[in-house]
Image (tube, rainbow, N blue to C red):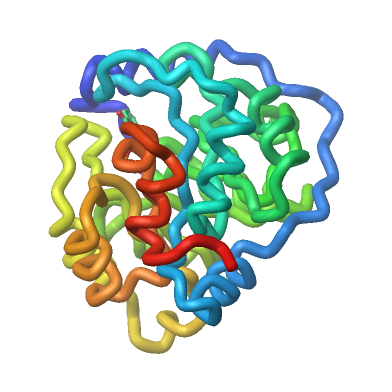
Length: 257
Ligand SMILES: O=C(O)c1ccccc1NCC(=O)[C@H](O)[C@H](O)COP(=O)(O)O
């Protein structure tokens, strides 16, 4: 499953940087805020469950957002975000573990640590409610999933193909994100979610929280992903570009009551 063949140069560079990054030797122990509960609460409140992503910059974004991340995070929550995603990758995304720590202290919603975690020691850098595990880049997804859970984390297992989805479900993933962004080419196609999500076996569907990731920018995109079965949507660029509170409220359909 782990293959770096054919990756865009920016993604190779991200992985090389992650390979060289040290983790911590002392395992963290987390008491997580439940992501499925936060998604259900947004639904009950009439908001589209959106995981709003604090992404100061990226290989596909021009410029860098330098406003106070805590203020941005609070604006996302006011705009109705069910949960937040915070980049902790410093070199290509302008994130940091310290930003996540500050944001998680300031807000009451679950916070996903968005990074390229390749080894168990990478899990121990900072506490979060959810960690991202990218199926494509993990030789032994099951072991990493178990390592995350043993520390108390919930794990969002990211897939892009039907084969990766199958591997994620076999490994026991119960929160699965289908990334519409192809990390080989960095191209975004919302049809990815339609196609990949449709292959979840009927017997598994109820026990999996399904998240559509990347490329969502309009209410029409939201409807499309929801109609294709997304329990929640992970949105970065369309929220970070401009008025974060208004952008979040536009996609959630309502501010937090
Ligand atoms: O966002 C990028 O440019 C990017 C480049 C290389 C690897 C990963 C990248 N993004 C990771 C993500 O999954 C997105 O940040 C996230 O799904 C939000 O996507 P979007 O709403 O399209 O900003």
